[in-house]
Image (tube, rainbow, N blue to C red; front, side, top):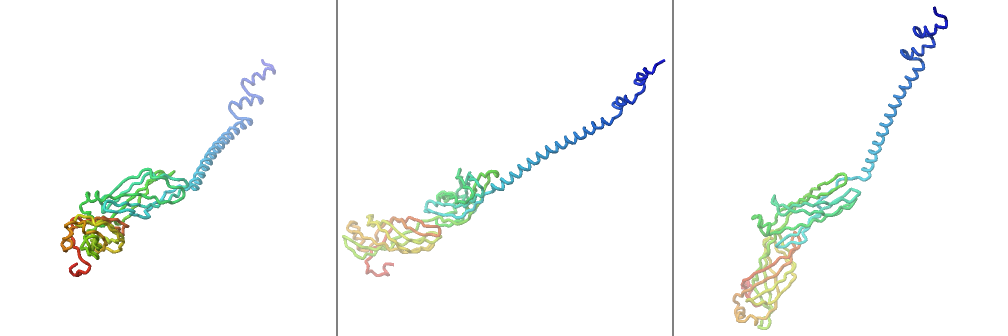
Length: 341
């Protein structure tokens, strides 16, 4: 039989007293103190979520800040595509052999920094026929926030054109198209090509035909003869020539009678002709026996060589004049004009 002192031991093994409840509750139930622990875990999770959200929000803010700064920088710097256009075409020099052409290209750079002009690619064609092409590398630098004219020098060699295309002949005017590609390197945008073109006409010059129709002398002696050479110039081109100056040397019977230079303004219409009076002073006694043929008015052999300066619709030109083995007559001033013709 058990005494009252032994009861606590029986209760602990089979039943739970009030004091034992915390032990039982911890195993199967949750006491009020344990609820606090559960609440603490939930708060931690929320805090962790808030912390994660805080981190995400911070990163988003950083990204947004960087984006805003980028837009502001881009807006402030204003990188943009340059523009280019052919503003003019000049022909500073043209003659029977070649035409030097200068193409003026107006380029505008809207960027706050200078940009390199990497290459200039050009082509001149006429009705689909390539006349000349080429590439100009490392063509310079375009200044920031400004515009400037880039000059592109080109050259047409007429012999190359005539030898390539049989239907292009001296004296003609041919249409042309100039195509130019400017290749630039712009920060942010990278390498860009700026294409442009311009059309026009260009001549293939032909030298005039020259002839001394007659020589009229105002004073004639074996020691000194003052004469006027009637020189006819025939324009062989499909465009007008405005004669400004003529210089030449003349040979009669293979003897030079000297040089002459005159300033005479006459117009030679396209495929037309004009007469120029050239004064000369010479000594017939230098001609030997040929002088007697000259005095008797017989035909006199001559050679004339020189140049004429003319204005054309395409600019000023200096064209040669030459004739060898010609024949002319020597006339007195009082001879009948009908005979002169």
